[in-house]
Length: 228
Ligand code: SF4
Ligand code: SF4
Image 1 (cartoon, protein in one colour):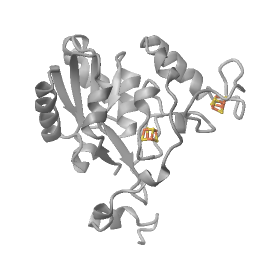
Image 2: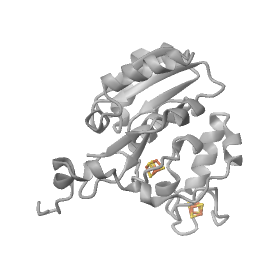
Image 3: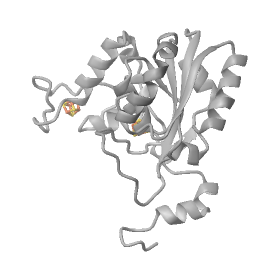
């Protein structure tokens, strides 16, 4: 399971600054289990955003937002609601936000931070990866994780070594920051590159103490042979 926690309300509202309408997207997988993006949380978010003066054009809670084929097929009958919104607020882990941003041509705001739960993790078919940094940056990078897509994990732009779109450390691999640049350009959001992202506080990767005393934590920390 991938554990997520909801971002502070002020941060979420800040992402929506300058926008009047939003489509809400939740996940019935790990996000529902984390209490961050299931039907209940999506309804709560809808009420809070409406109180804050935002128009909710529609919402959907999909079985697994990390599965792009599922995202595309489930959102097919929501196209008009999505078109009517300025953006999508995606209430799930970093993988789900990336899979959504890769599937829908719309600004996708992350509503959650993904935290480390120790042990093994479920596997997914897609290429999106999250290293559970606890402080999600997808808002500033067009929904592409700089920590996992850039070979050096750079968070403030390209290193300058890329050649013909390929990474200087691995010519077989696309340069993560070129992908981010292209995505932001297609969303008309290149101004996001002007923002300086301060060094990350990796202590945020760890879940809160109350989580570490739960059976869930103990279960996830077993090794590949099932030993604690
Ligand atoms: S920035 Fe990347 S590693 Fe951090 S939570 Fe978001 S997707 Fe995961
Ligand atoms: S070439 Fe691109 S992907 Fe490779 S380390 Fe530099 S910025 Fe990151």
